[in-house]
Image 1 (spheres, rainbow, N blue to C red):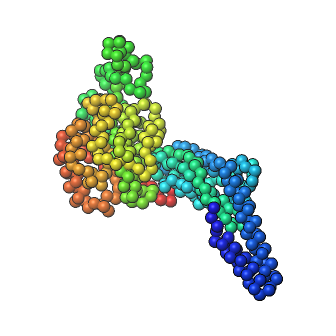
Image 2 (cartoon, rainbow, N blue to C red; image 1 turned 30 degrees about the horizontal axis):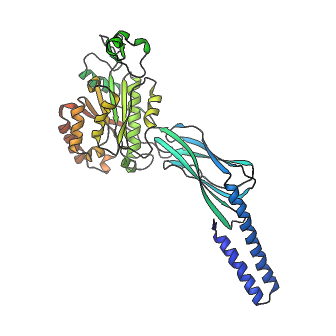
Image 3 (cartoon, helix red, strand yellow; image 1 turned 90 degrees about the horizontal axis):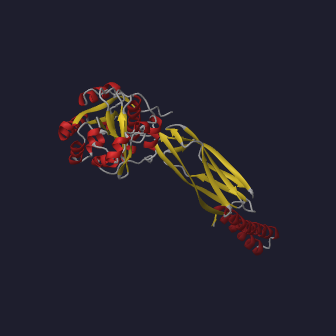
Length: 414
């Protein structure tokens, strides 16, 4: 319990009035002082009931939708349930929002909470970044009617939102992928069309009708057949995002925002083109791996961005991606292409030995980067020298370095 400045002033004035009224034999001033003191005491006693009332209060959060697109408005409701017999005459309620969720109107309200009653506070917020946004606490400052005393309480009211990046067309599309894959795998097109069927290991999403049971009887491993015209090129997509990239530029167009929009757009293009795409995104210390499930690009995007905290990213070097093959349980030779989404600023901070390790593991590596204002942080000459160094370090394992022609920044007024 804390006494407010208002309470201190009221108490001081009552004491002063009593002392001066008694000293000056002023009955009116003396009576006024006593009245103020009695009011102060009454508020103190009533606040005792308020403190008991808040012990019976529970708070629940409801979010309109748990999956949204970035820069989309979302409705949030805070329901305060007073199950006690005493009312809370005055309470200031404030929702603590995640960093990249901004309320359209400040989520701070002064209300009264009657006994045996529920009160709901609704507000709209905009989600300003892709990834997971965790809601946790609600603060309530309860007070007596005149605001002489306060009690600050923290309530747990958890909720979450998964925000998917905005997706747009990217120049690193079907023709580029067709050309690269065609150069490395004779006869294989982006959408499939092998002349010879193959038997391969079962992957989540494969039809059980295609399981070769005779192979299972011999090896104990589930194998499936790819019929003529059904075999498709397989790509491993690596998304390298760093926590500091959220501070490069300004919201909603930081380097991290642009990289994630580019990654989502490229993945969508690949899946719509008929590619089989396994994805790994580095979050904190280890990559999170999402094998292809064949359920559409919306499901794939949700699986990826439900493991990345908004504002987070990889805290390891790029060489951590070499562990993906072990996690996914697939030979690197089964991939027709490995695409690393990164940026010159990330590559500039990498140890050349870690970059070389990628080339030692992935023999068909394409580095893809979104267009961004890199020249504000590195000169064109530095970027050119950096990319030449990367090519030298990776040697024959590097297929190429591609920049998107389109920008992935959005209008800040969105």
